[in-house]
Length: 147
Ligand SMILES: [Zn+2]
Image 1 (spheres, rainbow, N blue to C red):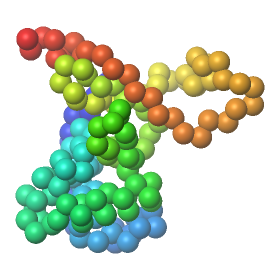
Image 2: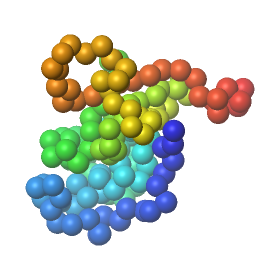
Image 3: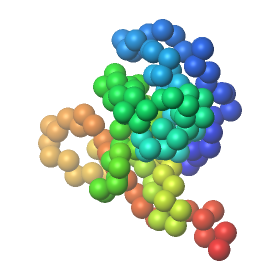
Image 4: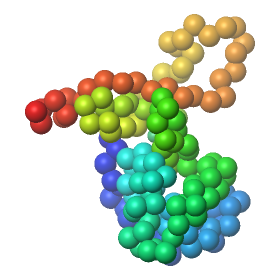
């Protein structure tokens, strides 16, 4: 259960001109790197605030457009929790989300090796699962220690 920033810093200048069929404009590269670098499932507003540090003139609308393009090309995932604003997750591996009720932080959780969703759900015979969206809510031990 880890969502700490990856040790490798993603640099926009190292992102290819095209990724997954999407032409990577300067803004898309920046937004993509922000998501890859800080994997805390930010909202569009969070991304906007971070993007402004490097591109002071970027608009929220541009950030939304970049995010939409990245989601449409399956480079990042759009995740919705309750009725809160969408968040963005660059982790394309199959995983579920754990929301810490104490801090609001969202962590990626992967399945134990060899476990298949069919092993623990009574799915109707022949069902083909194409998408998985599962959110667990609870308290991380690390957040209770702080109090
Ligand atoms: Zn995630």
